Every structure is written in C-alpha cells, then in structure tokens.
Image 1 (cartoon, helix red, strand yellow):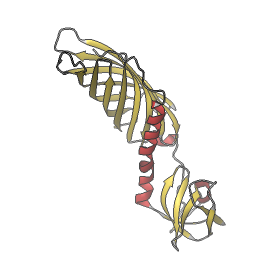
Image 2 (spheres, one colour):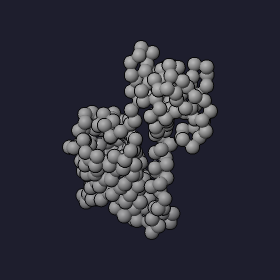
Image 3 (cartoon, rainbow, N blue to C red):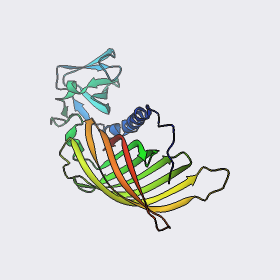
Length: 258
C-alpha cells in the first residue's frame, strides 16, 4: 500500500520527541502548585533561597525558622517560594521537607515517583517507527478507567516513497501488571486510514478505508512523570476490494502521565 522511503527518519528524531515531551510536561507538572500555592511555615533553622532552580545558582536570601512562605510552583525537586515581605526565590525540596501548614500540620513535599504512575488518570506521548516499511510519527492521549484498563485515541502520519497517509484510531489498552516498572500491555482498536498518492503523472484518487488492529507493548518508568514506550501492532486494512491488507507497525517513543 505505502512504498517505503529510501531515506530513513533522522537519528535525532527521538531526541526531538523527548524535548517536545519535556516542553509539554513542564506546564503540567507546575499546574497543580500554581493553582494550589500553599502557605507553609519553615520548621528548619533556616532555608536558603537561590536565584534559580539549582545549587549552582547564587543564594540571595535566607528564611528563618518560624517564617512563612508561599509555594508558587515546582520544577523537578525545586520550589519557587515567596516570603511574607515579597522576596521570591528557589529552594530545594530537602530544605522544606519538614515545613508545616498554618495549623501546625506537616505539609507533604514528596517528589513525583513510581507510585504516582499507578494512580495516573491521563497519559499522552509521541513516538516514531516503521509502518509496513514506511516511516511513521504518532501521538496519543489516554485516560485510565481502572489500574488495568485505559482508553486511548491515537493519530499517525505515514511517510511513504510514492504515497503518504494519515491514520486515526480509538483503542482499548489492558495492563495486566501495572505495579511493574516495566509494565507490558495489550491493545485492540479500530479506526480510519487515508492514503494520498504522490503521483503527478497520473492523477490517482485518495483512498480511505477502515482499519482494525491488535498489538502489544511495554511502558518502562524512567523518572518523574516520564515513560519509555515500545509497541507493536498488527493492522488489518478493510479495503473495498476482496483482498484485505495486513501491515506490521513498530514504534518507540516517550510518554508523560498526570
């Protein structure tokens, strides 16, 4: 159906996908703190405020024990805080791990970890791979119904030598072992595929067919909210002719969960 390109996808594409996922993840990881913004009381003898989210940034202010600060947002293991006098800076999570709320109760400042993966609601990611010998780029969004079952919608662009294609599908994904750091999954689904010939000598019509698939893969927890995802699907294109087409798809990419 789609002839393969002679030129493969660039080797740096996966790096670009990771950078894109990081850019998307940043506002999501900050969103909760930006809306919540708890006011806490420093329980340590003092807390050093840096000009940026890292120990390499200079210290420009010190907050003493018993002083209150407002947590504005989070970036990895660093928090941007504001003092009662309006001073703002970044403090390490370890420095305010034992902070208290205004009622004197401990405030949880735990880092995002693997346990949060099992409690995720949303998951989305990007991947690149091979679709029947042609290069493909895919993106998906998923919602967890339970720890073992999630629903996903996916879109793909297929880059062939003589024709390109677009594919959209809705999938059911089953996770038999969600408590594993490398967690296998199985998927079934259906959708639509559209093929657009590139021929300029003879004008060929675009083709749109139904497509169904079954597949398997695995999510590997990396750190924070990031997952490495590998997947294989066996597609059946239900053409208007009598000969349905079977296509194998392999892909690898990165995902983020919320």
